[in-house]
Every structure is written in structure tokens, then in C-alpha cells.
Image (tube, rainbow, N blue to C red):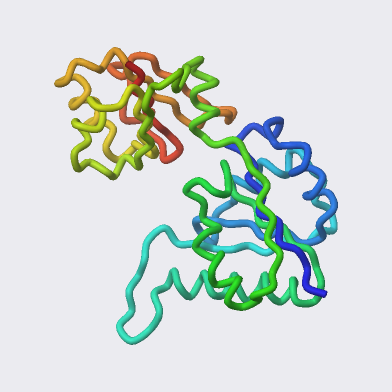
Length: 238
């Protein structure tokens, strides 16, 4: 019998935000697949789980997902090769009947690494039973920590990766709330734009929401270079 694959969102950083179901499945499983951005680095998702669940004796599959695609003429990209390697490693456990967990920060259905693997896994094992366990997204965590209401009644909300700069001014003007994800590389550009359209005082910058080194800025003028981080977002609430 093929094992079940449980894809668990472990939340933004605070282990106390793990759901009861997530904790139960993590305790019951014998095999956990852990995504990492660098082969030599650690996994944020793993560091969250380790604070809530004893992982002694569990098999850990480290899935390295490079942040950049490296195209090689006549060959798969480096990223494709890494994805396929992870698919094969996870499939080999599932096909021997081992229930396996794949952990991901935030929620598994929202900008999640797992979906790069999903179709490949189903191609490998068409009958695979995949269960998704929701997690708290960084958006919800950031809004809660900053004490912000994201939307009420018929208010419109837009969520954008910060790399989306086309028509950004128009989007900000048209929606009641705009959330810009992972803004570290374009923070100062966004700050200048908000100043130009008179919405700088309506913006909040949240860094590493739910983690021990979390920072919250209600005044974007006070944000400096050292405050920029990959795990960050801006909420513009009119």
C-alpha cells in the first residue's frame, strides 16, 4: 500500500502557531521532507518544528531548492534536477508504504515551494493520497502582530509579490488594502511611491513576523538598510 503524503504549513515562525493536527501528524510520521534554500544552510521550517515536536529517530530528507535557476544548454536546469531528485526520494518512501510529511513555512497553498513538486509526484504515483494541512500565513501573522484589520465588509484587498511593479501605483490606489510580499529588494522604491501618492502614513512594515527577532514599523521613514529582510512585507491600509 502506498503511503500518504501530508503537506503541512508550519506557520510563519512561532511554534505555538502550529495547528493541533500538524503537531499530531509530525509526531506520528517517521519521515519528514524539509525544504532548504542552501545545501549548507539550515531550514526555517525545520527550526519551527523542532521547538514543538521531538524529532529523535525520524528520517529527515533535506530538499535543496536553489533560489536561482541555472540554465545549462542541453540539460535540465539545476532547479529542475533538484526538484526531480526530491520527487524520487519522497516517492521511494511512499511506494514502500511509509507515510511522509513535507513541511513548509506559512501555508502550503500560498506561495509554497511544495507546488513545484506536486504534479511531478502525481505523475510518479497517480494514486497518491496527498493531504494538505493549512498553516498561518505571514500575512495573517503580520496583520495580527501589527494589530491591523486587513478587510471589512465590502473592502477590496490585493496581495502582490513586491517584484510586481507594473501598475503598482494604480493597484494601491484602487484597493482598500494592499499587501506587498518580500519587499526587501524594492523597499525604498515602494516607500518613495507611497510618499508621492500621499499614503506613506497608511503603510506598515513587518519583518520576520512571529519570529524572535520580529520588527514592526508603523512609520516607514524609520526603516534603514539593516532592517531589510527576505521575510518581510508592507501592508497599506487606507
